[in-house]
Each structure stands twice: as C-alpha cells, then as structure tokens.
Image (cartoon, rainbow, N blue to C red):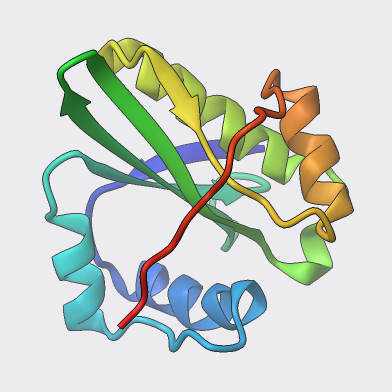
Length: 143
C-alpha cells in the first residue's frame, strides 16, 4: 500500500477523478483534464492518491487545503473517497494519516474536516485517526 502526493494531471490521475468523483458525490461532475491541471496548480492545495502497490491503479484520493489566518496555519481535509471495490482495507486511513502528516510538516495548528452523521464508516475512520467531534455549528451560504 502506498499514498503519494499527486502533482501532475496525468492520464491516470484524470481517470481516477472520472472514476472516484461520482462515487463521492452524485451531484458533482468529474474534473476534465484541464480542470484537474487547474486544481493541482493551486497554491496550498494538495491531492493525495492511494494505490495497493507499485504499478497498481490509483484507488483512492483525498484533498488537503491549507490557509493562514491570524491565529496560525490551518488545514482542511475534503473529498476523501476510496473506490467501492477497495474499501475496508485501510486505504482511507492511509490517506488521512498522510494528509495529517503533511499538514504537520507544513506547520498547521489544526486539521479539520466535516462528515455527515449518516456516513458511519467514515466517522469511525476519522475517530480512529485521532479526530474529535467538536461542538459547533456549520453554516453554509449558497446562491
């Protein structure tokens, strides 16, 4: 098993996006090659990919965004998804742990994420990785 920091929009990475984004969200469309390149060239945004071994296909991904605010560098995990055929074998945990380690290397004071309560397996994963449930409200403004 390996987790890698993805920095180029190769055909393999675009194919991963095409396969995994629909598994993550029914309302989101996969990124095109151009959109994948734009995503990967953003400053302070990192994409991690998971594969079971060298030469094997990418079966999972996680996005990590970091940003500086007056109280320090923060990190946010988004879009954690593992191919449905590869779930339950540690890929999600490996991705989350790699993102946490990268955020710590960058000097992030905290790493945050959100997860719907109905995503029971994901919530257990985040707790196993050391995340603690916070008493907070999440608000969203949508046009």
